[in-house]
Length: 370
Ligand SMILES: [Zn+2]
Ligand SMILES: [Zn+2]
Image (spheres, rainbow, N blue to C red):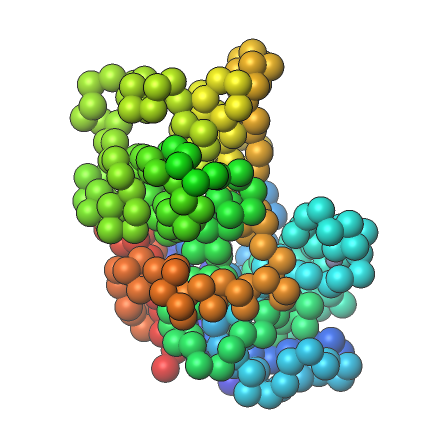
């Protein structure tokens, strides 16, 4: 099948709009027509060659939503016409991780996903006779993509796909980090570092959990309005407060926040987020993705004196089982997505979307195929 796709031929080059050939889905695989896809920082990290697993040429994109076009043999949990969200984290329900019920990290197909292929080791994308790699198992920058059945969340059919696509990464990561991986209680204080789609969604999670004080932190003053709209009670711009961010947070909260959520992937910010958690009980949840190989250091006494440092992957959400609930929360008005979408563009404008993201002008760009 022919498909328009944005191809990353090499690192640090503009994506190239091409017509590719998409092979039919194999056993346990599903052909999906993507309606719309968000553009996330993780796509840029890959494009900049900072992802150790980078393997070009590839089709980026991991925040899409679409409809099932064709099912390979053995597929029984989705059917043609179903609305679906591709998952970069599968949920096989059979591996030791899934069976443990202690994590949403299913690693059943991680190896081939990270190699840029389907679980059988081959690719479904071809350009002029050359194989093109998959990315994160999703490759939503192609109108047609092939995804393993165990990496597909079936969602209700009455949702706008060009909105709920953000539940494929950013929104779920932020809301879930608070609701699943932190322990926010009614009346608590929460600080959110970095107000991209993940951070703004973490603010929503804090609001949903009943936090009373929600401190939003970003060096872009334009983020204050939307942060407050989504539930923030305070805004800190580290560049203009005239004191350390951590000291400012301590002043606002009598010593530190009950929960801090880090959403930048910048090491110095991660360190601040740990320090900002209240001594004795505060929890810091790391969601930002650092460049491959980077390390952060903290004085052990911060943890010995009762702080907890945790991480969160896809908001701790098991995609196939739990993402439909997040779609419901959006449809019921509990989770705001529309306000996070600053730009609606065509897939042909994908390079503009990357520029907007790098310059900080966009909260989220959504690329449309229709
Ligand atoms: Zn992402
Ligand atoms: Zn599994």
